[in-house]
Image (cartoon, rainbow, N blue to C red; front, side, top):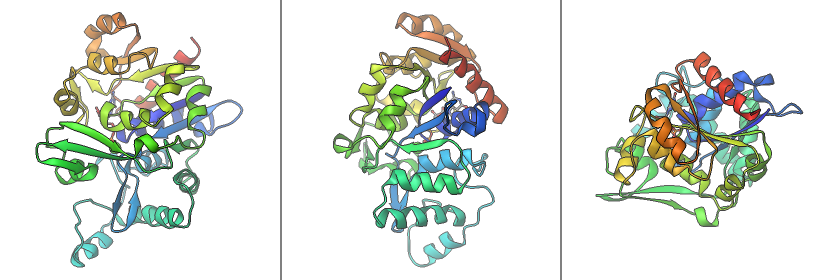
Length: 316
Ligand code: GDP
Ligand code: CA
């Protein structure tokens, strides 16, 4: 089975991990299929002169088994000697970067500067870390999410990390997106596989900057594979991060139904949590097939179980 997952950070990484466990050879692309993750780059930022791709790295580290599960981001067994010294040298250090994590950003930046596109750099990094699945940045071009708050427009990481996503989100802008081109393989992955999955990622901060790259939403709409979205909202709450606040401040229902409305015409199936069973009927009324299941991916087993359930949709 070939599976393509549209992903942001943590929600995308957890489900990607489930598919990597459920598919043969860790999801390595081959004659039998495999896993392709098309990942948001709107969170990318430059820190201390280095190009940081937080969502690509969260998916990459999780698939490599190196992700700090407790914190949700970064690597396990990190140290912070470089960050401490950067602080001493007068750099702002609110964006936490561990020593090993910094090595990723040094290598990425060096290769980008030498002229390699982000997609090629990502392929090299994932290969080095032993990730079998294919990771594709949605675009090799720069897309930068900017958040309008009551205090003005903020760069994404300023909003998310420095101010801990406490500001009301009045508007969102993805700078550069209109001129961005889908990365190599992205459109084929979306239209050509057996199963297309929209991860339980933040609909506005993670999924929208993927869909907004010209050609991507159209490819998804055109169909081909069976398409399913997993709701990141469970019981009216986000499991992590500001998805609930963002939905609310942009005027949407904070529920699996509110998420389903956003994905109307884009996917065939909405996967919602058993806690939201009462929303199955109104979601079906929107024209979706509804899968009600346990969508809270605790450990590796829970992720794999959800992935296997979604894989069954490909055959139906
Ligand atoms: P970020 O880029 O790291 O902020 O992560 P994403 O945008 O990929 O994912 C954030 C969203 O993932 C939040 O809205 C969470 O509610 C959702 N999420 C995280 N873990 C799970 C899970 O196990 N199940 C479901 N259904 N949603 C999850
Ligand atoms: Ca993110």
